[in-house]
Length: 171
Image 1 (tube, rainbow, N blue to C red):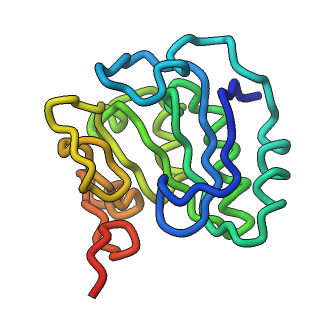
Image 2 (cartoon, rainbow, N blue to C red; image 1 turned 90 degrees about the vertical axis):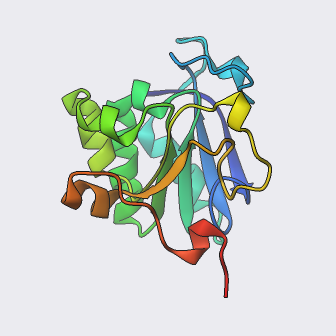
């Protein structure tokens, strides 16, 4: 069971292509300048099952990717790991935003590690108002990184995503 603040079934700003964005409820970071402060409070969202979210994703035939946003998905790692596995079984690319860094998640809880191992792309780091930039692809501030999670896990350190789909550097 997940605690959600909302779901957008046709996002074009939370990753490449048409995606479904799942906004979780609850965030411990409280970044100054956050664009979703209404998601900070824990326990006041809509309770849904992972299967219900999958059913919503499947309704959009143009969707090829799903992004977890927040709030903080890694504050609900068990449910989001289940959802990520269900989505990947159906062929979806799964990305997640987090206010934690990849390095913090590597040393995090076993549940956070399981979620990390279940996704393809991680946009990590807190939003930093002083580093805000509207010119960045899929990020709000320059300190945030777009990471290739399988490559990062294999290397044991953060590996930046090089796919032009994610970097916005089309030739």
